[in-house]
Each structure stands twice: as structure tokens, then as C-alpha cells.
Amino acid sequence: MLRAREVSLVALLLFVTLGTAAINPLFLSFTSLKDLFLNVSIIALVVVGQTIVLLMKHVDLSVSSVVGLSAFLTGSLFVAFPGLPVPLALLFGLGLGAVLGSVNGLLVAYGKVPALVATLGTLYVFRGIDYAVVHGGQINASNLPPSFLGFATGNILGVPNLVLLVIVVMLGFGIYLGSYRGGREYYAVGSNSEAAVLAGISVTRRTLTGFALSGAIAGLAGVLYLARYGTVDANAGSGLELQVIAAAVVGGVSINGGVGSLLGAGLGALLLGVMSSALVTLRAPGFYQQAIQGALLLAAISVDMLVSRRSAKQNAKGRTS
Image 1 (spheres, one colour):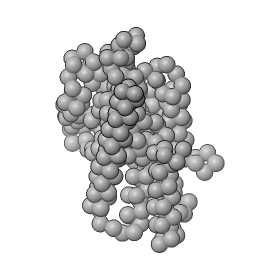
Image 2 (cartoon, helix red, strand yellow):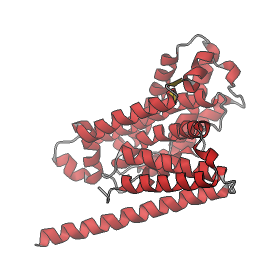
Image 3 (cartoon, one colour):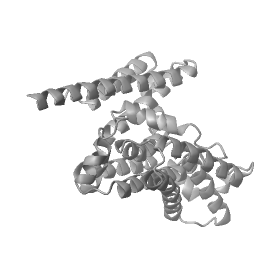
């Protein structure tokens, strides 16, 4: 248990949180913690889809563009149909994201385009479509119904609705990945795709489904992004993809595929959020946030590579003996 990545993440979280609170007690105030969890929730939600893709030994760089496009088009729907129910807006985001994610899945699964290249291309394509649709415009909170804005700002027993929704999604997918055959197949594909085929797994179908899920979750995150901030333009969500990948890798999701958990990925997102908030509280220059994220990402990748090499050596010794 002590060797688990999640335990070290919790220890680091406590160290940063308590250390910052010792310098500035307001860091642990209710308002500060509420804002922290609200800010982390969008990233944590997108991390769910990114984790699924990383488990298959792929990567999805287009999630930020999906979030931005989904946010603006959902806002446009509310402008055209002011009485649109909130559940329909959420379903619209899910559907739009699934379609965009399926484009990535088709390119990778059937077109055999490397995921890094395919999603880098769609990152710019989707963002270009976003710019074309926005056309210099902007969606403001005044264009959105109060019921929609209240969905993000409302709470149950003091816990924001947005945070509760993200927790439910993470728990659901965590159980799916850990306890059901479909979820375990993502680990199998990322561990050894050839062996997965021999085991009767449709790697092509599983890859397509994984990217579609990543897109759907990013689309849902776009709707929640709109509800959270109330104002979106063509740049909404820009740069989110790097934060999401960093959170997942720091949380123990291997870039080599087949290893990781949503609990660790969620803790990684929370750790990066706490560190960013702590630096703001301590009035540190903004560039330190990116520097620390990069340092954590490099450290996590280095640990991942060392563990992979050690496991490979142990397996080789076991086969020899």
C-alpha cells in the first residue's frame, strides 16, 4: 500500500496544503476550498476520458478544442432556444463530443494514423471550426438562463453540484475500468495489443470506443465550462490538453499504456490545482505554475520509465529461472 502512487500523492497534497495554510490560514477557508474544487472539477472531468485513451497507449490532444466548441455551441443553443432544459444541453454536449471523438477514433483505429499526429491535427481543425462558428462573437452570462447558471453555482449540503457530478462520473468510470470486462480491455490493449487480439479482443473497436468516450466526456466538460464561467469565446479551453495529460501522468497513468487508475488521475488533477492555488495565495509569479507542472510531469515520466525497466528486468529473470 505504501508503494502505491496514490499514497505518495495524498502525502504530497497534505504537505502542500498544510504548508500553505501555515503561511496563510485563509487558504483553508470554505470559500477558498470551494473555488479550488470548482476550478479543478473541469480538468478532473476531462482527465477521465484522457485516462481511457492513455491506458490504450494513445493520447488525445484535441480535448481542449472539443471543450471550447461544445461550450460555444451550447451557448448558441441557449440563445436560440432560451427555454432549453439543462439535461438536453448536457446531452447535446455529450453527443457533439462523441461525434468529434469518433473522428479521432476512425483516424487512429481504421486509418492507422498515430494518435499523436491525428489528434494534433484535429486539435487545430476543431479549433478552426470554433473560430469560424464564433466569428469574433462571444456568449455572455446574460445570454444564458438562470437555471443553467444555477446548476454550476448550486450545491447540496455545501458541496457544489458541479463537483458532485464530476465525482459521480469518476466513480462510475473507475468501477467500470476496474471491475468490468469492457473496462479491463482498455488495459489489455495498452499492455500488449497483439496479445489482446489473440485473447479475442477487438482492438479496433475498443480504440474507436475509447476515443469516442474521451470526446463525449470533453463535450460534457464544455457544457459545464459554460455553466461555470458564463462567458465563452473562440479561445475557451485553450491549453487544457496539456494540463489534463500532466494530471493523468502525475497521477500514475503510464504513457506506455496499460497502467494507472482514475483515483490516481483524479488526485493528480487535484494536486496540480492545489499547487496552482497555493502559488496564487503565496503571490508567486505566474510562470512558476507552469514550471512546477512541467517538473512534476518530467518526474512522473521518469518514475514511470524506471518502474517499467525494473519490471521488465524482473520478468526477464523470472523467465530465465
